[in-house]
Length: 121
Image (cartoon, rainbow, N blue to C red; front, side, top):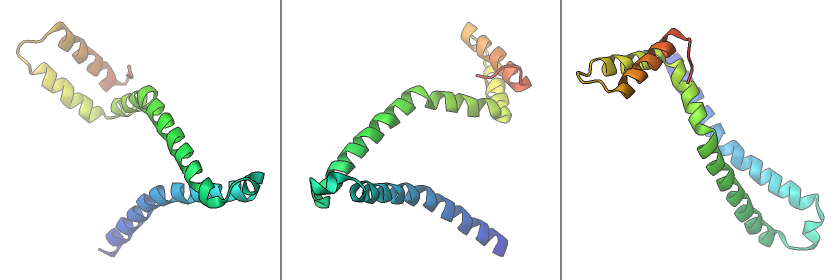
């Protein structure tokens, strides 16, 4: 009982860290970049913070969009190919269809290869 509670608290702490650490990192970078550069002689911090935030958020949105379009499908495929029980379930569902199309047959063969570990997506 106590062990389960400790594990749940540890899990919640890890989830919280993944949210708060990037925010703290951004704030730290903002303060350091303002303090250690000559930008402080040009504009005050209350102007620098919104400009920095808008530029950073825009850059992050562009990078996130590129990641979603280019890399996320590869990550999904790699994770899918490791889930042999899910692959087997999908294969069995496809095999149980009465009228199989050529595409269905091709998928069944690919899933069989994935189950045996000889083919990864």
